[in-house]
Amino acid sequence: MAMVAPSLLSADFTNFAAALDFLEQAGADMVHCDVMDGSFVPNISFGQPMIAALRKKTKLPLDVHLMVQEPGRYVGEFAAAGADIITVHAEACTHLHRTLQQIKETGTKAGVALNPATPLSVLEYVMDYVDLILCMSVNPGFGGQKFIPAVFEKVRKAAKMILASKRDILLEVDGGVNEENAPELRKAGATLLVAGNAVFKNADSAAAIRHIRGDSLL
Image 1: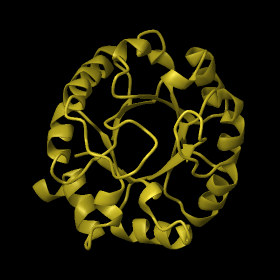
Image 2: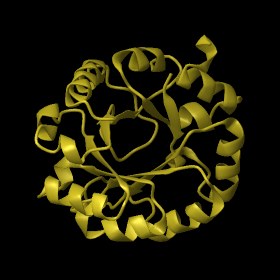
Image 3: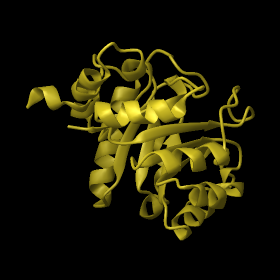
C-alpha cells in the first residue's frame, strides 16, 4: 500500500475549509499543498498565509511542495505556518544542501523534488538530509496533466537508492496519478502518491483514495 495525499490544486479555491473536511471524511493520509511563485513555474497559487489558515482547519499532515525559485528564503515562514513536510526542487536551489539543512533546523521534514528530466544523481550527496524524495511525473506548474511513463523506471531506481541508503525516506510521485497507474507505481516502490483530479473530480472520492492507496487489494 501507499499513502495518498490529494492535491488542493484540484480543489475549489473558494472553499478550502470544505475541501479539508471532504478529504478527512474520504480517508486521505495527507494534504498536498502546491505553492507556486510564477517564476520557477508559470502559475501562482498561494503562500504562507494560506498554509497557516489550512493548519487551523485540519489535523492531517500538510505536505508543502514549494515550486518556487530559491526556496531557502521562505523555509522558516512555511515551517512557522504549520507545514509538516517542506519539499523543495533541486532545480530551484543554488545550494541544495544548505536549503535542506535550513528545513531540518526548523524541526520539519525535508523533501527534494525532481522534475521528470532531472537525474537522481543530484541526490547522491544529500541523502542524509532527506526525508522524502518526490519524483515529478509531469512538468510542474499545471494541474490535470498526463502522466509521463518514463517516470516508472525513475521510481524503481529511486526505490533502490533509498534501500541502499538504509534510511526511512518516503518516495512520492506527483502528476497525473490515478487509479490506473497507481498499482504500477506502488509496485515500483512509491510510498506516497499525490492525486488531484483523480480524487476531487471523482464521484466517489473515498473509493478513489482506497484504490490509489491499494486498500482494495486487502
